[in-house]
Length: 438
Ligand SMILES: O=C(O)C[C@H](NC(=O)Cc1c[nH]c2ccccc12)C(=O)O
Image (cartoon, rainbow, N blue to C red; front, side):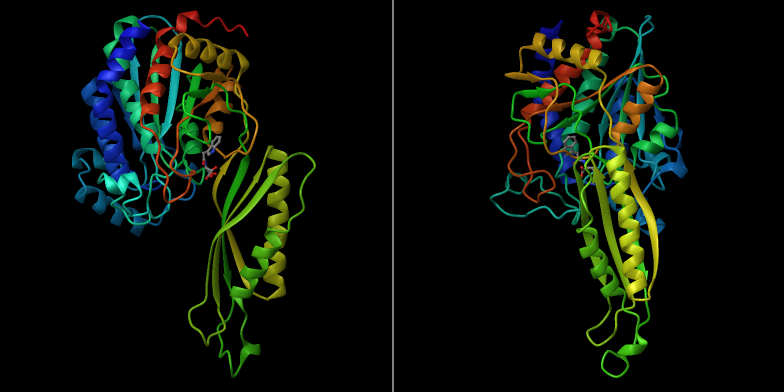
């Protein structure tokens, strides 16, 4: 059976590669995955899945960091020009770019959920011969949006898995749910799917990521180094005045933001674990000879536990209000995203380990890895599944990278797509072997 799957995936590889490169070229940032989601929905429907789309799987009020209505409308037009399938668009319009595809096998068995994400980063891809996506004609056509974290690979893994599982559906039992999530970057999308109840019936949950520094042909079966995080936009509003004639009439928003930036990076550590602060964007002012009356910052805090992140976040609020007070400007803080820390369940990690072993694809099968981490809002899904008595894990498929994640030269070895599909398909096919033991 595993051999049958492997052969099928190898046969599919050219079309998977084409798929990944198409998604890479038409990279779409969080909540703007209009082209991506219409293509994904169309493909899944053709394969025979029942679909839940848009508002059925996204709780409107739990969305974080949604772009403005004007940006959503403009990006919807852009997507249609780039080949989005118009008949699916009404489901996703307005920033509801999520999909859940279900396969009911008709045979008794558990509900298994697999989650992939679809969004790109707010980053400009390098357009240079030295960068393979440019050289081979699939660099991002969308300025300021780039797949620099591998989610084009994740979406392709999801679609390939859908195809392979449908092919062997007579040998599956229970229910398979494939979850295509928007807006993972900035940890904005998962919570809205959890609040819509998407994982409430899922007993065995697996989320995936490629790369993250894990070497090629290595698999991490239960990543547990997720940093809790809070994302915030801060707007400072002061008073503009003549910088030469009447500087004392001004209230300098730029200085407040600059002061806050330095203060944020000077927040003390916490003995409970490691932490991070980043001011990723700072924009201020209007003209050389005007005391700047506006400033905006995009900030994130992180902590290796929820407690550490909360501490950093509370300190950050004090720093921001202190800086505003110092320069007598007003400020407004908006929550743009959040994620918690989470750990996988050992029995599920163990099952993934054994299935990976049987595949014979990997040089090293690692249960968990130490070290620097990212954040992930799949942790909301993991925690919901665990709270309802289910099993959950987060699997990383290692791959060679041309540059680090979130870098303008990021690219990966597409072979990892096949490995991902084979492993996840094995989890579904062999579920009768899962005994809940450790
Ligand atoms: O916080 C975010 O915006 C999510 C984003 N997530 C990732 O980059 C995923 C990721 C990167 N490295 C790791 C390592 C482990 C899990 C997940 C990741 C990040 O951390 O900036």
